[in-house]
Image 1: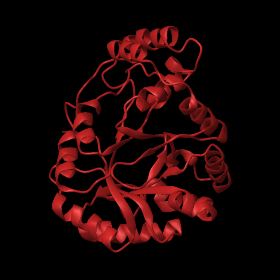
Image 2 (image 1 turned 45 degrees about the horizontal axis):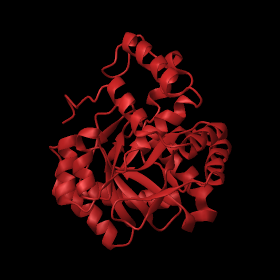
Image 3 (image 1 turned 45 degrees about the vertical axis):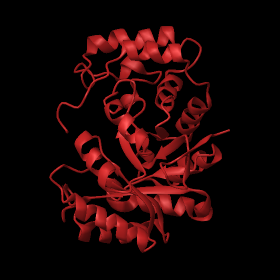
Length: 303
């Protein structure tokens, strides 16, 4: 059975595994099959954004979930604007843009409310009070139920945590990217949930391991370090289970994490991720071993 966790102080209970819809592709038939596999695995949390495939992604998600709308939680994001040539985008956290973007997302999703609306980025130089106003107005007007931010920047997260009624922060988080742990205690103390994305670190924490490694390494790990760390993880902890199990269970071991949003480009991948989330939790000893083996890291840039 797929367990659920509460998202912050909201009344949304999200499945421990969410579907990151960015990877479902541009063939609607295949995309729908992936979403249907997720529903079969009792996933109720679907994450998209107006930026993905120029809004086509939202249309696919909305159509595939139309008949189960009241049973699922749809999360989308705003703040990036495509330019007229559709070959690049710019950042716009203004109240005018956010409010208009929400209405366009609602149209594409074919729904009259968004369960979780997220700011898709953010910098410390943004007009943060104005952005918060936009989300608060959308909430009071009934267009969105709750809001959060998708950001890895500790200083931006602190601003929103202190000024806004955010229920969640979406962050890239994995055994190979433990930088978010810096901000976990603050979020926990304020009852703000983490939605973790990128749990398998571009496939490095899947069975493919070093096949997915670049000679440049990954974040602050060199190729040599990965060559040492990944086989050690496999040997010590993933002896009788998959690397994906270990990766997803590491994220879920922290109670501040409500859901791990993993992408999937096939129904089989959805099922494998669901199986990993339903597998046995890591022991304290295993978690300690993983933390000793990996780097805690902190954000040097992107503050």
